[in-house]
Amino acid sequence: MAIVVQKFGGTSVANAEKIKRAAQRVIQRVKEGYSVVVVASARGQQTDELIADAHELNPEPPERELDQLLSTGEIQSVSLFAMALHAEGHNAISFSGGQIRMMTDGVHTKARIKSIDASRIQKELDAGKVVLVAGFQGIDDDGNITTLGRGGSDTSAVALAAAMKAEECEIFTDVDGVYTTDPRIFKDAVKIDKISYDEMLEMASMGAGVMHSRSIELGKKCDVRIHVRNSGNENKGTIITSEEEAQMEEVVVSGATIQKDMAKIGLVNVDHKPGNAARVFSKLAEARVLVNDIIQTEVGPKKANLTFTVGSSDLKAAKKAIDDVRDTVGCEDIFVHDNIAEVSIIGVGMRSHYGIAEKMFTSLFKAGVNIDLITTSEIRISCVVEKKDAERALIAVCKAFDLDKPVGKRKKYPRK
Ligand code: ADP
Ligand code: ASP
Ligand code: MG
Image 1 (tube, rainbow, N blue to C red):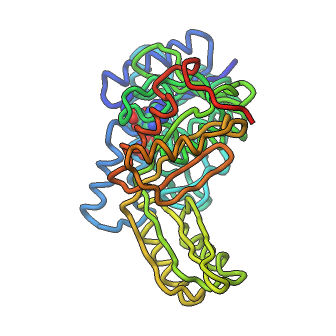
Image 2 (image 1 turned 90 degrees about the vertical axis):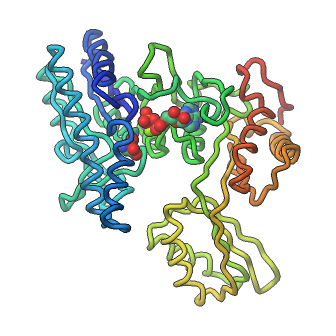
Image 3 (image 1 turned 90 degrees about the horizontal axis):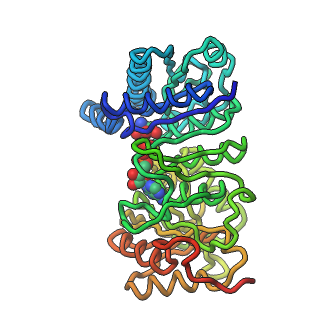
């Protein structure tokens, strides 16, 4: 029997009414003849509330205990969901991540999935049950509960879809799909019908909170077709798929993102000699800091400046790592700024068209936004700006690239 994975985000299971409605989406698929695996997130804002509870008792809660606590939110959701299905006469069974041996590494609060025991799930599907799995969590080799990072239930769902060779992974959320940018900030953003894994990965990594970036990495690696859609209506959402299938060649810029929870650390006048960058970044890796952008510039034959950005939650660990290594690399001064944000544009069409960077920088200039740092990939241009300017910058960029218009009505750019 063909399998489909359906993931319901926090708002889609926020209360009994919403769980009942979500259960109907599952029943619909069962009636179509599919075996259904459901992944659910914690209800509503429960993860935030649990984090607040933890901080009330300890400003720096041990990460193992935090994972143990946070995992309970998703377990409540799936057991309640299973009860709702039983009430409708459908056989269903719920599991924690550990119970289906969702094996992860031992990095608490940002663990990575290593493997899943598909046989246990398959046995229950073969017995005619809907299988519900708590999202966002796994278990390490020593039996400790781990979590996958905020928004991580998407990754649980895509990993399950890959392990079960599902036909599709449906991500049910509170918007109609992936939009050209966050519709909460730019209300005229338009829904994207199809987007390639690479573009979605850049968007998710650069702040589009609609999908957990790791889920897209996995989706690409395992060729999982992902359908992001609204749990509150039947509209077709956004398909995340291979570049060939997405066929977005004529779209130059597919989307824009904003990342606000960021900080920048600069090492001023580091000795310009082989091995120093390696020393700095191995210290950061040891401290398990995720570094976003890195910029090094020469300031003379003997010295260089080294600047990098990190998520705000990693700032403390990053600062400590840098303090530990500064003397070894001859660093004369360190600056830390946490009042920055990053605005990015993303599109595979950038590879084959001219004038994109110029358009972005001009739109920021016209909006009176100063650019602090610029970084690029083959399909992305990012500008670090002051946090106070960030939303204005995003809106200016969206307007410049017609991200409020359907694809056919956007300005054309010369081809390379
Ligand atoms: P869930 O709880 O279902 O996982 P999330 O809050 O994680 O939902 O993700 C959905 C939210 O992501 C939307 O409400 C929207 O505000 C935000 N978002 C950010 N960027 C985008 C984008 N490009 N397209 C759609 N939604 C986005
Ligand atoms: N409940 C977790 C969070 O709020 C995971 C998720 O929603 O995907 O981050
Ligand atoms: Mg989410």
